[in-house]
Image 1: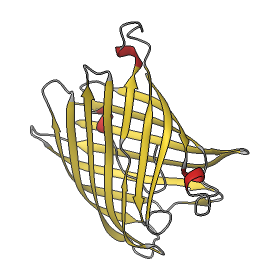
Image 2 (image 1 turned 90 degrees about the horizontal axis):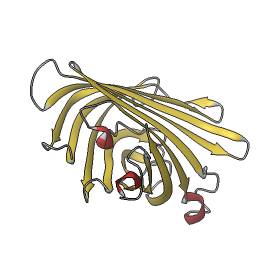
Image 3 (image 1 turned 135 degrees about the vertical axis):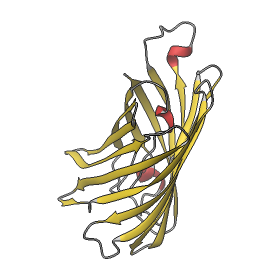
Length: 230
């Protein structure tokens, strides 16, 4: 699950083949922070897609938040890693944008290098990106962002621990520096002996930890989630 100004999180998708998944999250933010987050949507769907090719890879995701009356916000990111050479470094280009309750988020463009590591079996890996971030028509247009992602498959793929951490500059009423991380933990049901390999359902949780994001200070918000990998 992603929110308003989040960045690329491809940790679960760093494999040699194209992958796509659909997630549904039930968010406990309204229950935990009933005064500060009383209008926070309880349900979010996420569609993620990652496809490598001989010139790099393309990743995008689309988030939609739901209330009783329907969809309240939609947000998407699309990113391209360019690698015309061998090695762990790639050139990263990214766009972020979306809509919420009658207004649009400012277009954000990010560019910079990415370092990627995967072990030989693709059971674990991480990335790190250092980027210039331009937020169009924002009173602080010129910013920076650091992003780390990771994934680790455990017990022969029965469990997956993945996530990302973002730290960026953006002048807001809550401060100039924003931090967000969203670790996820999944139980992959098709790795159980009694379940067919093509039953690609996972159940798990995500914990959103933020500082100076939508509100000032620290917030820790867990979800219950299901995911189907296509």
